[in-house]
Image 1 (cartoon, rainbow, N blue to C red):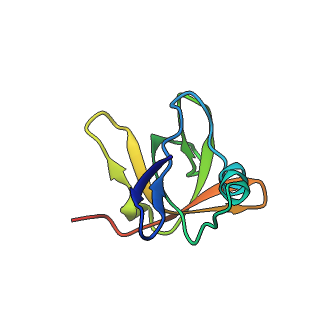
Image 2 (tube, helix red, strand yellow):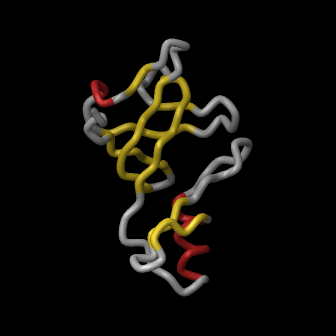
Length: 102
């Protein structure tokens, strides 16, 4: 994890490209280190599945997307990027899509 603001304790977690991510595991590691997570945000690139989820080709991990699909960014290569709040619902990793940056 990379600390980006030592006064506020803000950090950035960049997972290995070949490993799936788990908000639950991240929370556990942060708590074990003596810290709390106030909020989480994530940006993920991949392809849309037929049921509207985002699949990361390198790991096979799938994220459920909440919010308007108009908030997705589509690259010239067809790759879709989703960004927003990261949460877990049941056993699913979920991205609450944020308004696109201008």
